[in-house]
Image (cartoon, rainbow, N blue to C red; front, top):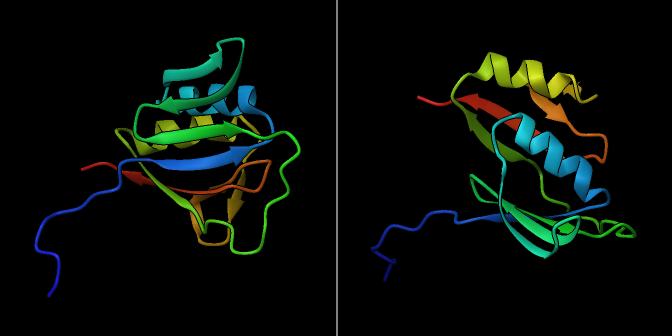
Length: 113
């Protein structure tokens, strides 16, 4: 029997080597930190508006099977992309709204309806 209730993604946790860079980047595109674990100046992990959990792991080396990408809605896609590109992200072959962060994390930015 199939599960007959609605499920939704509550959050996504991502290991990052430079948590401060990621905090600033996600705040710049409209996803500021709303909760911190550990010292605020040097947090172990943070949670952003929109369900992103960033876990500080400076020495982490990702295994095969890394997450494919994050899908992020933006109220103003063009403004969010303009801000994102200021952070040294790279466009991906799928289109300008697909970006790769310096640590390799891929994001698909989409216009919220």
